Image 1: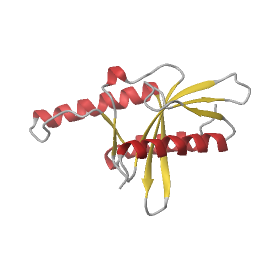
Image 2: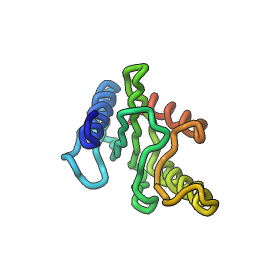
Image 3: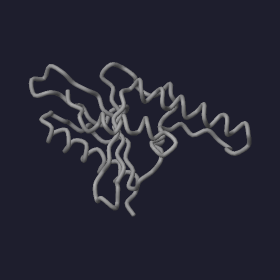
Length: 150
């Protein structure tokens, strides 16, 4: 099993490859650059996006995130979540704007706070859910990734 750094790097390179295939210029940042993993531009250089990638080596139901206040939510901030689907031998992707990501993290904390109060959860874990519990939102985010272009 690969370590988390390698999984993250694989996810970033997958996203860069996919964006390039879609006709965008996608530039991975230096490893451990604060905030962004990829800067993407249209070929003309008139539009860009700052992208944070979260990657998993298996089909997870959630992606760990920073606390909501640290989720970048500017007009050019994008979060792309990728998880490996073993049966299909490919990544599945989800795309959220920064605002959507921040709202999803806030919603996860609200949900977990209720579980903590009723004793079924010990600690809060900011994340974005993409499992059965949030299937409708996950479907919208999956569709957003499938067709996203600058």
